[in-house]
Amino acid sequence: AASSTAACAAEVADALEAGGDRARAAMAYVRAEMASMSFDESGCQVVQRALELARTAEARALAETLRGSVLAAARSAHAQHVLQKVIHHLGTDDAAFIAEELAPHARAVAQSGTGFNVLLRLLEFSAEDARTVALADQLLEEDLPGLVCHKFGHRVVASLLSSGLQRQRARVMEALLHDV
Image 1 (tube, rainbow, N blue to C red):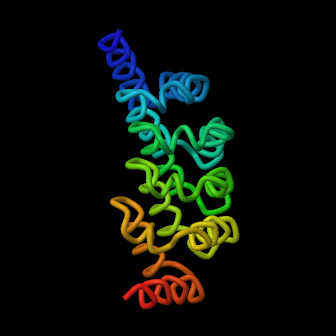
Image 2 (cartoon, one colour):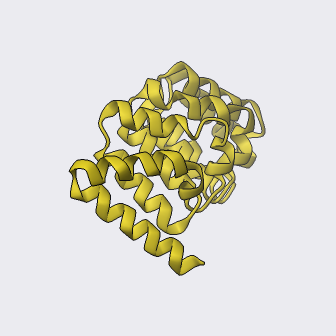
């Protein structure tokens, strides 16, 4: 089954690159199968390429298919790359639903071996957006010293220090200095 999935993904990838009617059909297929393809090793690469090749409206439509499954995608070894591509490729407003869906689970995502990467991209590309600010604030409300010492969480805290709002950076520094 894995080899047939990889073969299908390769065929779709070739069609995306071909242009014309084949590319339009492949883009429609990716949109229809986006949820399952995003969670598959071969499929997630095709989805990422589709996001790169798509016109803005098409890329938005692709991203919208992830709405409601962002937490699961952030925890996935493959789909988290798709979320990162959405954040990087689309603007802050188009990717804001990702921050909104992750905010209630901010700490768990920051401590996830895959999810922390999604938070890093949000902080890199939209640290000042209200939805990302709310997510970051959620992180700062809970055991900040514990997050600083966490295997993955410390990378999110470091990103807050470099990209977060001044008050967020001050909160991190306060926690660090208090713990000395």
